[in-house]
Image (cartoon, rainbow, N blue to C red; front, side):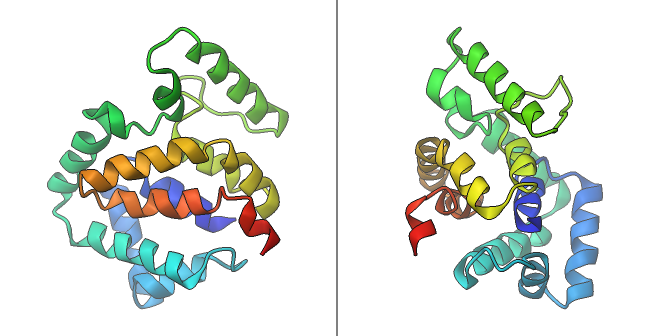
Length: 182
């Protein structure tokens, strides 16, 4: 599911090459809204979620590159309560975090995902990369395990008035199993 892949790259470090590629893709589709809609070919995400993602993309493209990169570092690297390493929110630096990371890495391998061993497997963009290869029901079940952490992370980002909060809310929404019944 390409929208999860898009969310993964939007939550990763916004290097200049990525921003240039995003700008080109948005221009080719005639705007951020059309771009997001073109990515969600399976229509897994709602119109509201498309709007949130498009608004974030427009915000990203309106930023000065240096300020965008500095803001990302300030948001995610310098504020532990905003960490994109999800087990950090559960375990902090406790020794019990290690086994959880190993289990997650082994889970990825059971699905055939070989990630860079230098990359910590609980990094949200990596998790979304993994989810992008799953069926929607599998994706929701996988994300359900992270829903409490995603809610806390989104609330922390909202408190800091970060535009990234809206992306986390979209992801959290897809970890809600109750929506499968709808």
